Image (cartoon, rainbow, N blue to C red; front, side):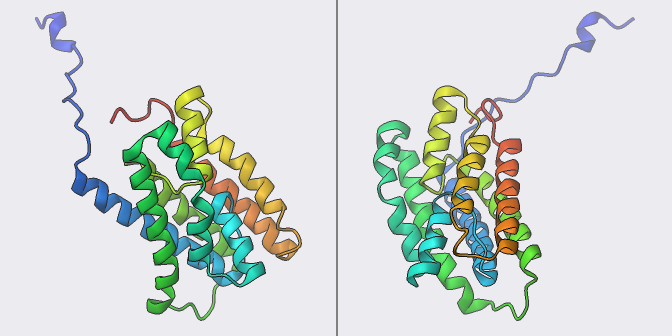
Length: 210
């Protein structure tokens, strides 16, 4: 007869931290995904939330490239990142922001969309961006701005990053009422909800141990 010990749960192998090479590859992959989603949104004149949403507003209103606006808008947030999140997180985040700024302006040199249905492009672009965010978050990086604030508040007070960003993002999208059509405004709001639902479902306190 089998003893009770036979039914003990197997011991899980110890978790190991990501290597530098793994972090570097993840940052490249994550920023490629986010920047490709940005290109889809920009192609149809849509918006999203966070600092990317502010960068879109500057891009549409001032004819400044999205990459330039995105990089500059994020600069003030690095102080909070250094003080609260540490240098490793800040350096990864700075690299991620710089890569998204570069990739979002480089993608059109290699791919051109002859036709994109605006509603589809807005929703699917945000799905791609949400997955890219999770890749970056998993490797202790972010895309600056509200990501830094949201991750800090989650780590410090347990406030879900996705829920906080969802509220802020909806406010930013609503502020764009005079920049985009009502149809694109509705699509942009739904897109902001989708990207933050992806973050809320997949990035929670205690979800990962390394």
